[in-house]
Length: 355
Ligand code: SF4
Image (tube, rainbow, N blue to C red; front, side, top):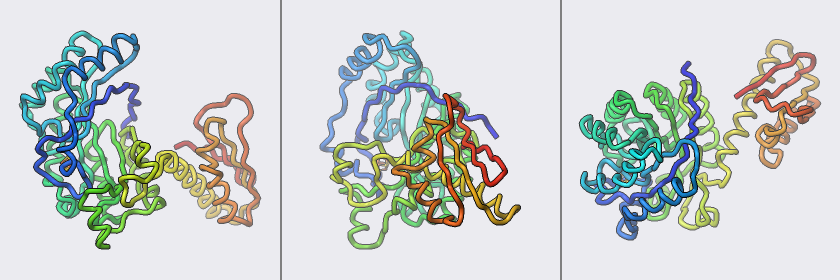
């Protein structure tokens, strides 16, 4: 198992609408709205870098990030113009690297070398799924092999490799998800973002939801899928840097969303579910060996309280109902014991759980 490298880098992000994106992926509304979005100006980028990083005198690792579309698929002169202020900051030592998000089939070895020289140190690829049929159905316009090749080239260039996965695209089942997880593990990405599919207005998926040919994931399904991907990939040494879309005022008010498992604290729900599964596994394994269980005491460090008990005590309620014959005690550990270990005493046997 590879050791998970914790990313401590702070990002200064800029959103680049995908000018002239030749694709219309079923979940993406960028092609439909790109005409309404203004491209961030180079002056704005330069000023933001100065104000955020140099003038505030922030210490630590910084990366300027160009998110939002397929950076390496936009005309090269535009890429270079946009990169200019970040490259200057990189050369002055104000930032430690530049980060881009792009499509797997928009990666070329020669261009990667140039980007590296300009200061690009991290590339995040929109992988979405590694099921060939689902890629076609999602109208992604690239293959699984494109993803594998792109990942290989990025790693060979010595850059940090990020991937983005979208559980819940049309055709997703546990079988396709497990296959995607296994293949994603083989990509040996450094970091990964997991965004269960949310159906955004002005997308083909929104049309499909209205005509009834696509049913989005429920929150419960999305949590289970995401928790699985997260723990599988962490086990392969990939750090999960985000689970679930960033909450926005519009999304929180339900504006612009047609369906799907949006929840402002989605990442928390996934962690709650991981603890639920870990405790449940200990119970089941104990039961198999020792038979009937009478008493369980779950003891957690204070910072883990809501993670282990679940949001609004959902895990506490779940176990109380699911195993009502057991006498449950949930309590915080004494003192400032902040190790990530949760103790579960099942009758007379003590288990230490970590995620
Ligand atoms: S996801 Fe990327 S490639 Fe697909 S339509 Fe949106 S911007 Fe274009």
